[in-house]
Length: 196
Image (cartoon, rainbow, N blue to C red):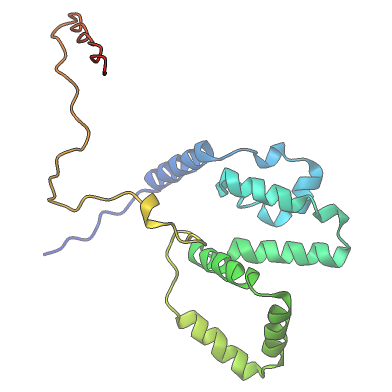
């Protein structure tokens, strides 16, 4: 007979959530939101709530992107903020898929890209919904970012199979003397006999 789980007291729940919050604060990467300039904070405003959870590498990328913000016309600034807001709302899998789509479209010639976009815009709304539904039911991308270029097999490490006991290819070091003794002297090297 299964027992119902014991109810959790509010004090325990609060304690667990404060520990999680302090762990998240310790894991926060630099630069902190408070360390950004006013212009950077304005440029990256849609990311303010998620800034503590963003990796350092991603923060550097966002900071580079934010440099162009002040010089953009207001309509482009609004478009940039809209894109950031959408990006923040994506799941990690959706972000991976977006990166893959971007890499794929980047390889298209500009004329091809424009032709495909114009063809998509000309579709009736029902057809666009069908395409969106097909994309939603497509296999999900892996939870990690995929490499844009495949890695050559010679650069990959061979992972041993379970239960496979191979002898290491590296020769074992000679036995060390016990309890701090000195190491044996190296073997003398004899010169090769002169050849005639």
